[in-house]
Length: 420
Image (cartoon, rainbow, N blue to C red; front, side, top):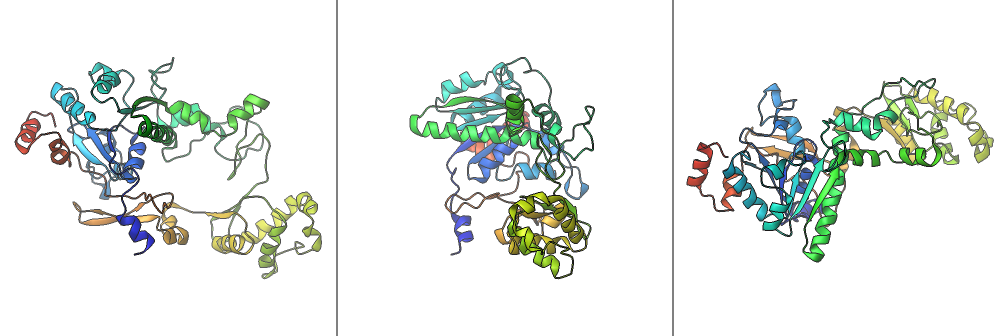
């Protein structure tokens, strides 16, 4: 049996853990991570489905809550239960589910669950070992608790948009902020919520104690600016945008170069004497200029001639396909270069294919199988994988509610009353 086959049969490291997810855009990524690691993640939705199901694009442009590609991505391996929490019966069922759970992941506005009679203190009284992870925009307390936020605003408030973008010729105090795409603001909060939850589970494994975790997406974003905040605190310097490379208080040499086939190469890690192996590749087409001169074996000369060297390299890279420069730099010279690829090109990337990053996920209701992004790391003994596609609305009502004593007749009655 191959390593991959062993991983496909071995239970994930969170197998046996039950998580109730009452989370929207801000926290659904946390639930996905836990579900793909084997936890039994039950997504609680209103009978009509969560609003995230209305986010496009939709499969074959058919606007259906079960066809949102956005929802598909963020909700793999989860189960779906529908409950109307505005009704007492719905809240009672919710409490029964949480009573048998290890974790409640919730992203409601502070005070919402307390107003419904299902806040932390109430739930803890029935399940002392419960971990409640409350991921909100600004936490449970503070002067900004009631402010409305979006993913883009988190990137602005956290500082990312001030540092993302491209080189500017001169300092412009009115320069507009630039937002990266892909839900990065929400992801930061979700990742910190995930880390905190795992720490709380470790603590519980030793003490049996649950906790209420108060996670702020705003603070998570501010932490994820890396050295930007420390730079200001200790030196009063503001980092500046730099195209294709890390923002910094001082400018670094440009690293992004157009290629002969209309793409871009990102030249990372600077230049050193090991770069000479790449020069030999350039020399094969007579484009090495003077870079074969023995003087470039001297690190001091390399440092002094950086601008000239980069210009000769830029002229060469502009004449050949991106993959030629990329492969030569990586395999021959050991340089950390990379091709800037479009999303569709990533699907055919040799490295991703070799690693098995993209995985087939069946959608039996459509009679089709689609390729999904898989795990970001390979865990030999504790695999992370997509167990199944995102659930249809209320798909698991019978199974999950049956586990707390709701039989088929009762379920039909609850559905007729609009509770499930």
